[in-house]
Image (cartoon, rainbow, N blue to C red; front, side, top):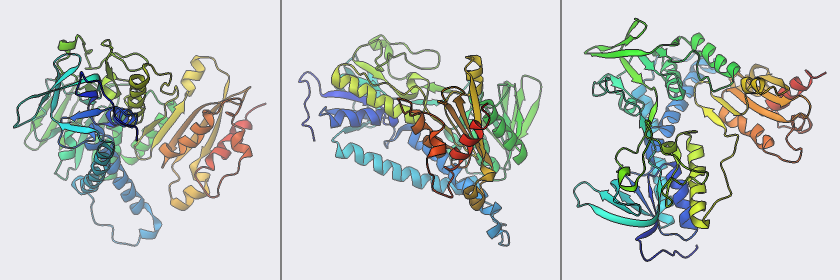
Length: 471
């Protein structure tokens, strides 16, 4: 291990506020480079929102429900008694177990790399000093040459919504749901809203999904998002597009959502999942001359450096792409900038997106709308999962793989997938997309040999399908 060195003027070389993916990525890189590092986490355990309220619990819930659906639909179990009803509180137990394992693992990272972990609320005294407030203890001042903000985000809460009501939830507090609900309204049909719509509908809960836009997940390829819309419709989810809420009325036996269009909807509870806010309001940014925008986010340069040279910011607190995967890389890049004085490494241009609905959605690269607008001559290759032996064996035949490639050069321009394991399948194509010097062509999938039967075989089927369209 590299011997730790630090400036005598400060307690640490770097202080990182937040222990989510961005904070962890920065802390590990700095520590392994011989820097003395401290992290501050306001919650009792490390992991940040990603581990405790966001990515990990929601994906654990999704996994449980997905396996439950497979069980109910598997012909092997059709003769068995399927009268048992899986509820949201039941699947929370599995999520809690995953969270516990993640906390143990991530705590060991900090311990092994001799990163000092402080628990408490952090705020700036000046550009190098942090005030640490710990319940039951006097405030403490710690200092560092560099400070990285990885404070994450929280659900947006409009002031006219009473989130203290026992039937009104956001995407954090929904994990405290203890009732076996029969009907839920989800306001906001972004990634979080769609994922929870899948979870609750998979449990047999009646779901009303209210979308403020004209179609679901409009940043995705239109065919892929349309496939999700159809799957929701086919499974019984009611989607209402182009709606805005006027007010939410909490009752003893449920909630009533009043929409600006004049519609009224009543359900057992509501999940408000329309936007997120960066966690910057309690950092005392005024003390260092920084100002967050209306969504609590900070501006940074390519090295994730703020307008104050020794202060960096990564993850949700800087906005797009607001992905746990990207936040970890951002943290490492910011650390490299501190270590070397500058960093020539950047986040990749084509960041893969995985959306953990049931079935999953995933994409990397350009979609058809973008290529058409840019007047790029492209062609499409498709593979339907229902035609793959592995999907037939696993009874996961819903979905497809879609490859977009340049008509002339055969270069792969975009990969879009809908179906079980889509978030895994997309990385096979991503690896080829990243190849240089002519290695990125759709013909790779025709000339290579895939294990049989596999879902990966979809790439060969889609490639042949696309090449057959050329003339």
